Image 1 (cartoon, rainbow, N blue to C red):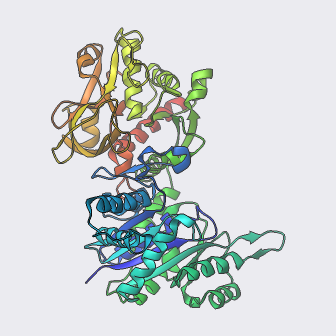
Image 2: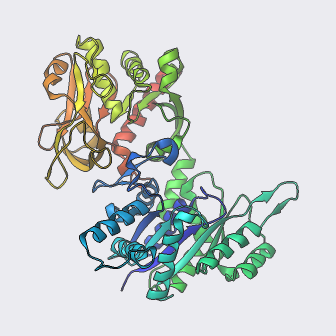
Image 3: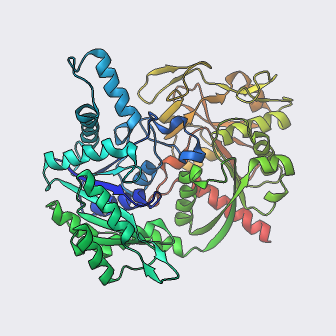
Length: 545
């Protein structure tokens, strides 16, 4: 059958959880035997979020084919089995760029290029390319109804509803039901106004999902239905829950997927959410507890490390360990020292860019190494581990990365200028290259050294993990580091780039250049994070004893 589309919009306020609701519905439909894909359409003008500050945008998620995308794609991949890519996330910037390039080539035959039809046609084209081959494509529209920048996207999906027919297109609108404590009431007026705004654009929602702290009384449900022209049995609530992995079950128990299946005339089997029930069961019944220090520079906005914190939760599920994540600002450690880490069972230093707080991260690695605290370094976390080892164990005084000190006498980390991508194509860049989309990106194979801790963790010799970085370990100084005891436990498939390192005579110190958090999910977990949490468990027992 041809692809059917579910468009999810949001109203009243941002951050209502459209991504989680979309991913949860997708997981329910997938459990019913349907082939599902998901798209995120972002109205901002950036071509992709790769150059945006984590403080503004949160995490940049990287797909296997090397796209820098919105963090919602991370939620999508954690909830469904399909692997997403470049076609699953596009922005207004990408749409306008495509249209302008065509105009410059003369493809519009002298037409005046306008929002309608040229921009809206390109949005529709990209949406249908992303949905191709799936039974159902769930398409989340970023932003809030009423935002001026989202209007072309709203018009495009309105047109798709008209052109493809209402048996093939479904509109879901997510709104807020605020609770006024003094009055003791849930207020429906913001939802009414949001739907009125949506209908003014020409879109009548088929389903409403109302985010709330409290259950929606039948009287208020009937009121919402009357004033929004949405059937009462199509008005649902999305209640606050203590873990996002309860959302699929909560939506299914209200009958959301049955309404979707009926409205789209889908032929599918009954829902089976046993996988999610198992995830929640293990998450809520841990057998032990550990304290993990995450040391970075974006600690005021933990959304910057969303995939990483979720990967630790996944590891907690598969090791039945309650993981307590403690966020430490590396700048504070730089100023005040590492005493704050003394009660932590393990330490993780994530990726990042720029030199702010780097010396605090280097001091953190030294603390972990000298005190036998399990340490996991990811991307920059590996690079600072190499810098620390070079300075303190390999007699490379003032060793550094050229990202932080271009005149360091020992540039153990340097700009990567040549590499091979996942398709075998050779890539090059230099210090003057554009920032956007020029890093080593996406899934790449890594060969693990037999007999190392890294190889034992993965239980295989070749792995594929995703990358996002510009700097690498300097090959010309590796021999000196290895002589001092640093173990290079993983290299790129062509043998030219260092992918993983560890050290001798330490309970658990492993660092990787790639981002394993991008391939972790709650149902399968990830071997590297599970091994890290098991090591933290042992260390925690030693601290207690």
